[in-house]
Amino acid sequence: MPVHNPVLEASATQAEATPAAERHYTPEELASLWSLSSDTVRRLFECESGVLIIERPRLHGRRRYRTVRIPESVAARVHRRLSRA
Image (cartoon, rainbow, N blue to C red; front, side, top):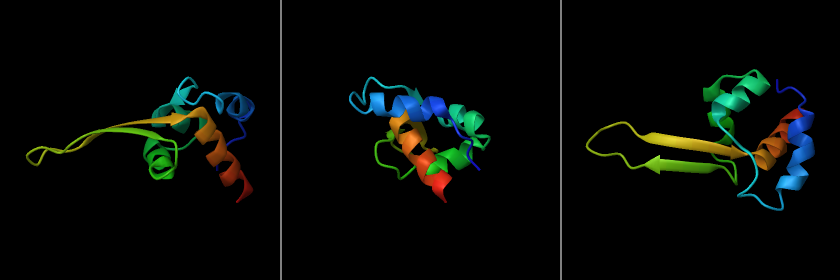
């Protein structure tokens, strides 16, 4: 279960004004903060609006490479939603 994180919640309102300038987390960073695996964090955020996903196209059967960055405001929104459940 996600842990209450006042830093994420407090800064989310400030960051919403400038989404490009706000702090972006890697799945590994959020996994550490929330005591989850990075794979679980990736699944939680893969279809979430506002998450930055940079993907290199698959070429000749090679695996895909994806870079995922989760804005602080999106992390706070998902944390609030999960906390209510």
